Image (cartoon, rainbow, N blue to C red):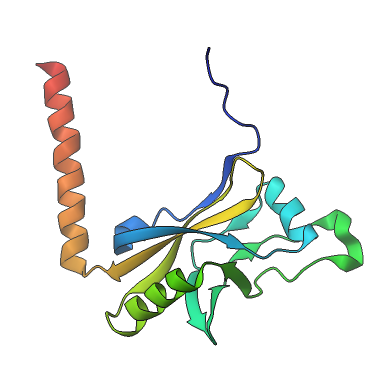
Length: 156
């Protein structure tokens, strides 16, 4: 029997620059606290997490500067587009993230925002270390070489 893809699970937004600007050491799936108008806006696919980041503040994990467009039908009961949103992780994971940011100098970068199989909004966060300009050039060179290698294999 062929499995159909779940209509509830789909990608909302992706931070494609994250893998170019950072070395992603590990990633973590976490929940996000949203209002009703934010979820409705996400269902229409109007969001951007490219300039956002996550931060541990006051014993809680927050998503800062993520853009979720206003939902016009919400009227007066709408939401702020770039407000801080609380992320939901276990205490153990929060302690691990806090330690990585504090001691090891890592950054918490949002990678993807998506609906899971149950239709809930989830955010995948990467624990990352910033790349230098030389590292970015090296990544570019590897990517170009792999493309060229594939082209040569196709021809030969």
